[in-house]
Image (cartoon, rainbow, N blue to C red; front, top):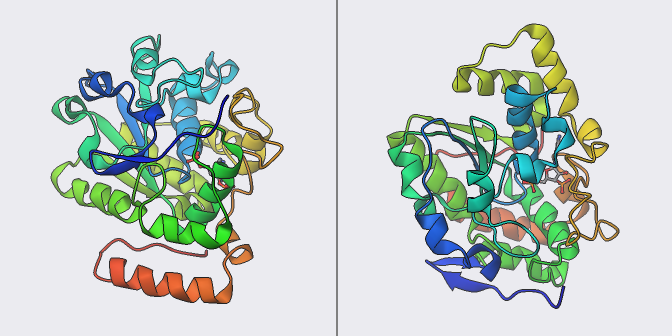
Length: 288
Ligand code: A3P
């Protein structure tokens, strides 16, 4: 792998070429009515929710012998040794297809809406998202360099990270619920607080009825501790991730930001956050 990719503006969003090289195919992707789209801003718990939904549908059959990024293709990725996400999705042998995206809502291929696909969105509080993204950018060789921590919060606030502004992302998807009822908006903090309860909500939304025992099985398999030891969920087979710098399954907690933000960084962030999110009906818990 030679060098880190540049960040540039594409359709108004900061991206790298790994997410734009296949754009025509992404834009024209043909969704099927039973496709399930798992959408997030990076580091919100995408892999966690993907593993849960995959376990709900396919657990115990072949799913657990295939890495999560193959079971749940990443729609817009292209290059770096990955099959283009659109091709991987089309080649999925299973149904329903579970498809991951980090795209802001306005860039999602329109056929997902036309086909009335079920959409799951998970959001995570911004402070923990920043910390998780920072460590991810340090270890992921196909992301722009993280740079110094002191500058990272500003990059986040100005949307200069891959997939653009967190504020616009979480709010855009939140607003989408008004006009698109086949969508469930989840929070990382709720999943952490009551995993089985949130998995039950996901089941109801997907129209699945699981026995108590089955629900317990999926909950047990998707705790942080178990997923960290699961080589099919921890991205250990991906060469571009240098897990000696920081593991993909890093901490999996709410409130790790307290170990990173200084008092003044925290005060400045709270001020910015209040100005931008103060009037929103979307609220986040920075601790549980
Ligand atoms: P941390 O870096 O804070 O540990 P994504 O899959 O969207 O890239 O998100 C990755 C983040 O989700 C990482 O956060 C990772 O540890 C956390 N995560 C993954 N599986 C988890 C689980 N089962 N429970 C809690 N957190 C999990």
